[in-house]
Length: 200
Image 1 (cartoon, helix red, strand yellow):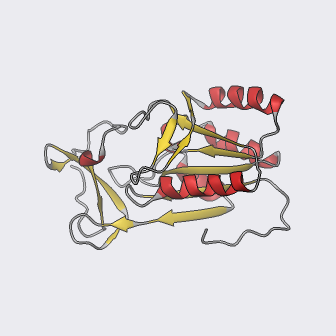
Image 2 (image 1 turned 90 degrees about the vertical axis):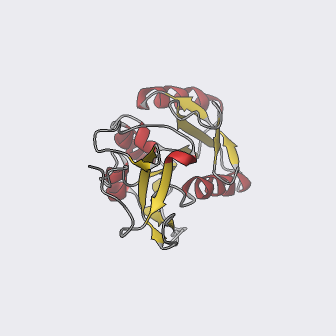
């Protein structure tokens, strides 16, 4: 993490891992959750049910690191599952991957968990394929105590990749393409600010 945790802090905060595609967000997300597991913290991990690229009940990074996760449709389902699991064993850490794919109430839900003394680790894209702020992540950037904004390598020039270019039939997607479009890596490229082509 770019910021050093103050171990004297009261427990309960939000850690946000963000950036463009292929920046290593999911790998960092999994590593961080495992670190808490090794410290005997009880964790629970969620993922949007819409993201089934690599499996229904697992989260995979592009490097094939993985962790078990519970697929959910929305923030209400997350609360319900959390409450059921928390009855048996107090949960210390909540992980939520691809937070931009959930309803906007998820930000309030995660804030409430942090206020109750739970560590929240969220991961998601900072910008969509149009280079506009992605919902939920934009608000978590303001609310999170700890933020890691990761970059990748530009597919075009090898520079600092900070944007996600959606590719359809070998060309950048048009502006009116669907905002959410789950696909394998051949549909997206990481681009720097100079190589990114604004959708038209």
